[in-house]
Length: 319
Image (cartoon, rainbow, N blue to C red; front, side, top):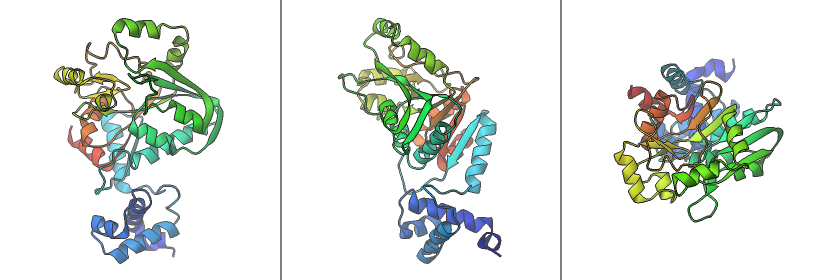
């Protein structure tokens, strides 16, 4: 009788969790023992079991029961078309670890399809972390289009715009948006978006089969503010108007409704593709992003989600 039959699924679940904490989250065996409430020797045996049972490849290849249950409940509650929940590391404050790896796997899987697709890409730290984990690929049949501008207020390339990083790794036709992330006025935005070279890119973005985006919070350390795209006074004005999060620069409130004026009338980003005809997948986790994820899911700004256990449980508890 092999160890799968002998030990049962619970022991394999523990092995998969220990393997994830060791190989993905970078925990020591002492830290794993403390996190799981077991001895160091047991932690060592579980990590070894994860290897011997073939659960460890680049990521832990094992369906942890709690993650699957949370994913199924999220899918049902918010009518989402795709949900993946990865294990949480209680000792980590990272907002990318685990979901970046899962997103890279999902992006790679879709790019390996021989059927041509249009993939739209947003921006942000989590998405950048995911793209950096993609292996080199030859995908001439696909088109990858950016939803957002790639120029910072000082004229430099926006650091967390990922279209160029992706172009380096994936040999697919890439369509950047050569615009400022936020224009200086509504009139400038209108003029820029009406340029003949921009119109085909906007049209292509609207036709995306699958879209990957991040969700930025609008707290004191809002990415839009920290990265220099909006001023402190604009951030406070957005907060006062009820803004709690943003997707590719578009700021929305707790009901998922777009904030009128302020910076939203100057955002140069494309609109999100139709959630009725395509898949819009958010990569997001953590307490600061929780209100934005909840609003986006409730309002169906997204119809796909890659997150972690803690965030998934908090989303379900918020109902």
